[in-house]
Image (cartoon, rainbow, N blue to C red):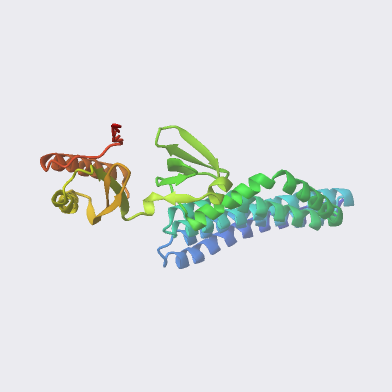
Length: 342
C-alpha cells in the first residue's frame, strides 16, 4: 500500500513540477524572444513569440500528464488509451500552432505585394494551406499510434481519383482563376469586350467572373470561357484611334474638295480630347466622293471619347453648311433618251 502511495505521490509531483516548469519556460522564452522581437518594426515576430508562448504551456502540461500516467502504470489498456488521447491533444496543439504561424506569414507576404489581385489570390489560398496542414498532421498521428498506413494510402488514392474526376471542372476553373490573377488580362473595374459583350469587370471569382454590361445587367462567365476567348481590354488603351468616312455629292467643285481636309483638321485640332492624324480624299463611290479622316482620343474613357466624337461631327455639319458643301446620300439618276424615227 505504501508503494502505491509513493508511486501516486511521484506521479503527482511529476505533474506539478512539469506544469510549473512549462509556465516558467514559457515566461523565460517570452522575455528573451520579446527583447529580440522589439528590435524590429515588424509585428509578425511579436505575434510568433506570443503564439509560441501560449503553445509551450499546454504542450508542457500534456507531456507532464503523459509521464505521470505512465508512472502510475495502472494497466496496459488504460495506459494505451491515455497515450492515444494525449498524443491526439498534442498533435492538435502543434497543428494549430503551425496553422497560425503559416497563415500569419502568408498574410504578411500578401500584404507586401503591391498587386491587389495577386495579394487577394494568395490570401484565398489560406483554407487550402490550413487543410493541408491538418491532413499532414492527421496522417502523422495515425502512423504514430500504429495504424496500418498502406490501406489508408490505397483508400486515399482511390478517393483521390474519384474526387479528381468529380471535381474536374471546378479544379479547372480554379486554375483558370489563378491564370487570370497571374497573367492579368483584366482587373476589377476595367472595361472589356469579349465575344461581342461590352462590360465592366466587377469581380473575379474562383469559378466565374461577374461582368456588368453596358445595358446594366449582370453577366456571369466561367473563367475558362474568359481565358479561352479573345479579350479586348480598353482600360490598357492610352489612345483611342477613330477612323471615319464622309461623302459629299458629285456636284462639289474642286475648290470645295480641296478645303475639306483643312476644315476637318481645324475642327479636330480645336476640339478638346482629340488629336488630328490625317484626312484624305480616298474614293469615287457610287453616289459620293468619299473622304477618310483619322484622329486619336488620348483617354480610355469611352464616354469622353464619344463626347469628343459628337462635338467633331456637329462642327463638321455646321462648317459644311457654311461652305455650302452638301453631304451625299444614296441616290440614283436615270437618263432617258427618246429615239424618233423619221
